Length: 362
Image 1 (cartoon, rainbow, N blue to C red):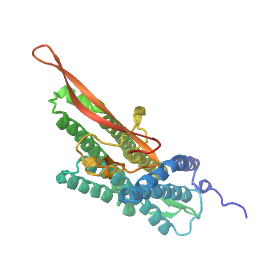
Image 2: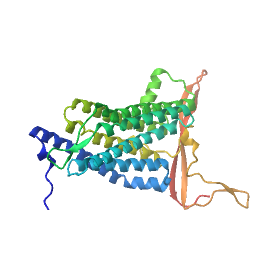
Image 3: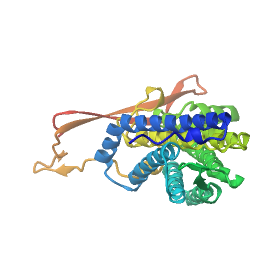
Image 4: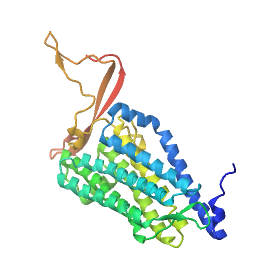
């Protein structure tokens, strides 16, 4: 049985055929990149399940990955294979887009909850912002209908209403606001812990460069900066692209799939780095297992904490384990000159690193 003809041959002219081929390259390229990312991080995903089990954040993470894969795969199918029922296919692919955007934004909302655990006003406000982003993504159902290309068995999507740009614009605004919440929360926790009085210039350097922050907080800040910078740039590019190529649906919608793939890859990377105690973050800084500041990450009991028991000799002992756990604490000190000319060094923060080895702990 011969393969079906390419949808490009049904284009009314050469220019339309060329634009359709470019849109196909965008989608197939994004699908290839995402499949590579999934395969590359299979071991990390297994480690997340092994160390943390199946909980709600983990389920949201895997839901975002599966829905992104399904969205990109269906996007590649609709431009390369004949589809009998375009309407049903449209409902499926757009539903996957809403799920991937909602779950990916929910991963960033978890970070806000971790930093602002005891501030229920902030948590409530950002929950409303998350719902706003979800509502924006729902505009694709009424703004992007599918129909058969004239004289062919292939489906063609076109823009019925311009407000469909909210499907990208609303999540992008959400990313910007979430970044400022995380960055400000990390810096505020550092200031409260060290009792520092920062000027405008020093506050600027702490906020954007992480100056004087301990390793954990600086790593968290840098990861957020990179993740949200890429997400915001991708969203801004997609919105501009959408309006620049308003006259051509092939070009106009080609950017949606790469945008979804890039955003999910970045937020998934941050989630994995935060979950894996042995993971590494930007600049090769190891990801510590304990947060030195009183945020929500300290409200949960350490997963490696052991219960002490008393033996018959009245000595405190820890239960024997098949591995030895060594904890090293790094203390950041800041020196100040006292009025009598002596140097007084004060701790500005501590970071605990956990090292595993063979043997037993007593």
